[in-house]
Length: 622
Image (cartoon, rainbow, N blue to C red; front, side):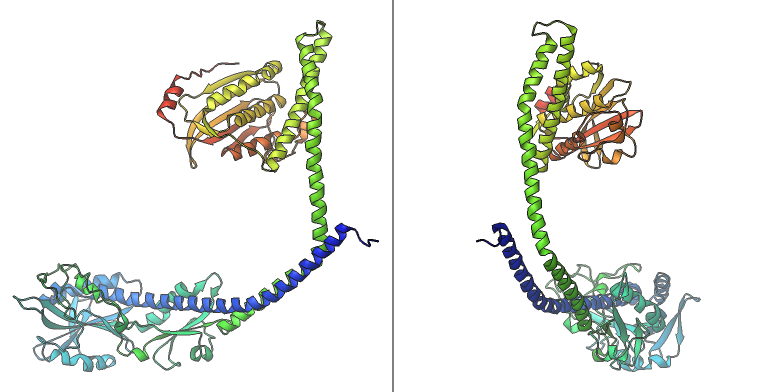
C-alpha cells in the first residue's frame, strides 16, 4: 500500500535535496566570506596606496610646475639679464592658482663676494638684501659652489631643482653649458642659484586640503583619515583631514608613504633628448654632438624641462610623510564590519528560501501544468474552429455572389452577414495564434531587401474589398527612389492590413485614409517611414500609453460595441520589433490618428536605383 502519491514523494525528495544544498551553501558562504574579506582588504589597501600615490604625484606636480615657471632660460643666464628674469617671475606669480611662492631670490657672485637678491615687484627688478636667518643653512650648504664658478663642485646638479622641506625652499643652480671646438665635454660656467621661498601656510591650509579632497574625497566625505607629518616626529603635523584624528592613526596607520620622490629610483631616459636641448653634464655626449643653441628669452630650454622632476629632498629619511587610516579604526575593522553585514544578509536570505522552498516548488509545478493546459486548449480549439469557419465563409461567398441561383435580396443579405462574421472569427483566431507564436518565440521571418512602396501597394490591394465595402477613399503619396528595407514582405503586409482594419473599425463620420512613404534622417540614422493617417475617433490621452499592450481595450470601444481581442496593435508592435522596425502614433480625440512605421534604410544598389526610378506612384485615390 502506497502511503503517498508518487508526485508527492518526488516533491518531498526534491525539497529535502534543496534543503541539503542550502545548508551546504551556508557553510561554503561562511568559508568563502573569509577569503573574500582577505581579498577585499588587500584590494582596499591597494586602492589606498593608489590614492596616496595620487596625492604624492599631484604634490610633486605642483612643485614641478613651479620649477618650470621660474626656471630662467639659457639666454638669461648667459647674459645675466636679471631684469628680464624679474619680468618673467612677475608673470609667473600672477598665473599661480595658489599663493605658493613667498619670495624669489637670486644668489649670484658679486665684486665683494656672493650676494643675495630678492624680487621686488614694485621696482620690477631684484634688490640686494641681507641673508634671512631662516635660510642661513642653505647659504652654508651651497656657498662652496661660488669658490670657483668656472669649475663648480662635482656634486652640483645644474638642471635639477632641489627642495628643502624644513624651510621650505626650492633651489636650482644656474649654469651655462656650451661645446667649444672639438672638446668631448661641455664647458660648464656656474652663474649662481635661484631660490623660491615657499609659503608653508598656503601649503598647509590650501594645497594639502585640496589634494586630499581630490585623492580621498567621495560622495560621503573622506573614507580615510589622512595627515601629512613633517620629519620623523609624529607630533609635527602639517595637515589633518579630521581635527579629531587620534595619535594612533599617526603612529600605527593603515599606510604610510614619503611624499618626496627619490631620484636614485628614477629611470632616466637617455635616448630621447631633443636635438636642440642644452647638454646635460651628467649625461654622456653623442659621437657628433649638436652645437649649443641659445633659446629666446620667452622660451624655456627643453633641456631644463628634463630637470623638473622628480624634485629631490635634502633628507629622504626625514621628509614629509602621508599617513592614512580608515575612519572605522583600521582596514581590518572595516572589512570585518562589511563581512558581518554580508553574512547576516546571506544567512537571512537562505533561511527565508528554506522556509518557502516547498511552497515555491509546488506552486511552480502547478503553474507550469496550468500554463501548458492553457496553451494546449488555445491551440486545440483554434484548429477545431478553423474547419467549420472555412465552410461558413465559403457558403457566405456563394450566397453573396448569387452562385446558388437565389437572386433575392434576402439571400444576398444573409450571405454577406455570414461572410463578414466568418472573416471576423477567422481574424480573431489568426490573431490568437500569432500572439501565442510571438509569446513562445516561434515566429520565423524571411528577411529580404524589399521596397516599402511595393509592400504598401500589395496590402492596399488585399484590403480593397474591405475599404470599398466600408466606403473608404484612400489617398497615396508614395515617394520615389526610396532605399530598400530589410523585412519579411508578407509579415509587413499583414501589419499594414491590421492597421487598415483598425482604422476602418474605429472610423467616425469621415471615411478617408492617407498613405505616405518618405525618407528621413534621425539620431538612429537614415530611416524609411510609412504613415497611415485616418480621420476617425482618435485615441484619448488616458488610453494612449496602453494601446500596444496585449488584451487592452478602451472604455469607448466597449461602450460602442466595437469588436476585437485587444491583440492587433500588440502584434503589430512585436512583429515590427522582430524585424528591426518600430511604430509610433500621433492622435487627438475626434481628430483621427496617424500611425508611422519606421525601418532603417539599407544601402541601395545601382540596379535597385534604376528599378525604383521606373516606379510610378502618383497621388490618387482608391
